[in-house]
Length: 288
Image (cartoon, rainbow, N blue to C red):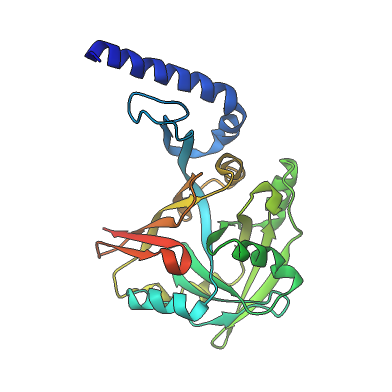
């Protein structure tokens, strides 16, 4: 194939894909208008094209900044997963149990403004039925918690956008002599298949973001980027758009339609990759 013919094929494929996206994804793209969009990648593959010459389906991904509070990483064995993080040079908070009605326990990896919550089910309860269903289909990043400073206002905003959600749930957990208190609103999981989206308000943040818990032996400081598999990337992204980032909570999140582990990009003095996919569905990329 000559160069001009090849370029002609490329241009035609691009024009066709743009037309397809305009008709198929216009509602989702319009809903994403409030996002601080930083990257949008369309991999041409819905039909054979000049690059891959294979038909492997259309992949649409968007990376954008959201008001992230923490990621919920569901695990079967809390001790094994937290031990793996500790061996890789992370400081992991002591094991604590939530209020009895929650039936869960966690350990956390605290970072600047956000954290990774390693969450395990310790007894079945009505309030953790959703987490149990998600864990049954595989662990890993199964929850995205967005920061809220006023859950009553958040509830009104969700209602105004016709987003089904739970009432405000308040609970606590003990850490040493202190009681950490939180309130959350859970978005109905029918709106985000395979993922629990929730809004979280901290009533005692100073008891969680302790300096000694935020210091890591491997020099990790912050979460720069999270690439998370999602069954419905565009629908989940539409809901995330209701939580625009602030300077204190900004984190870039990328939702992908592919299955497999999530990849977390961490700002660190170290430069290495850590593969925890087999243990908890995570790959960590440490970079300065």
